[in-house]
Figure 1 (cartoon, rainbow, N blue to C red):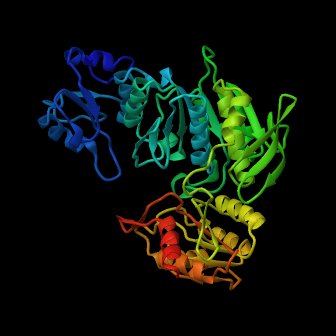
Figure 2 (figure 1 turned 90 degrees about the horizontal axis):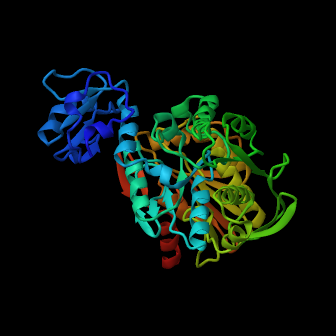
Length: 486
């Protein structure tokens, strides 16, 4: 593709006539990826400023450098107001605006994103489609799994992935959209068909500073649905959440509300939960439908309603959706139940926010047959204000709590635990910094028919200590414990 086409509708601060006919073979912001014919885009990151790597990129074959500040006059530089914005624009042009060729569902909110996107993937597969998925655990094109580092990839990676999905004849894509991604512009140029809001509770205040800023970041997904009406677009919003009404006003597109109250268009009633399933009555447009799912608990009813709304907005019928929901077995590390040789039920869950922890403890209390023991920690280099809140929730809603390490990262694990227990007035807890030992201690303490909730890491198979990832999987610890018959 010629550079002139790649730069269509991109604002530049210098003349680019001499570059127009250059043949472009690729784009990158990483010098390791530069090949002959590439454009190198200088991004000022937290650790490295790409503007200092322009010469290295040229030596590897780059034909043009995109920068937002002047470099050496002999370099083939195209100046732009923002290289982050240009990255999204150029990626969109180079890959042929792929998101416009997809029915793209963006899911944002503090909790529930992973479960909802997986429910949607299952629903679309159940009707014979080959869906795409982008999220925390991995990206997927049908059954092909692609490893990922971020919940939402950078703009260049994202557009390249969309283009691959188009080539693979994918039509529907369910995508987790994080508040970080929205704030940092990773979704610029992405054309969403459906935007889903789950809930807004305390998280990421180390990044956003205030809950108002956090909500403002989430609102970007709904404002980015746009104001044109040449194609159907829908916002699917949890109206039971106080932020739901505000987000309904942010978008000019159709709004499909869901919830238990507030006259939601999609409303769940008469919810019944067992240890293995949840059943509820769905009210929609004056009709009632019985919905059965293998997911456990009221928070998963919200997730199910969100998926139903997104699937409806994507053109599926309620009959197709309800039939598919019955066979969805859940996600790894989301209220995942294991039974030990001692007949103890271990629940592994990703709950790492106050609201998420409260939700899973509340549902575990409903289905437990004995005592409920909790194992939980808090991540390092993240929002410190939620640490004592999570400790209060854990001790208030379980019979005994083991406080331990999550991903301490560069913080002292002991300091994190100090923060957690700082305001506790109860003594129904123990402090064991080593996560493996804490899980084993909880399983030792548990008697037959007791429940042990292991919260915070869920699907993760690593623990970050310092800046190093070490292999660690909560599920493996439980399985090893059961196998050796401790």
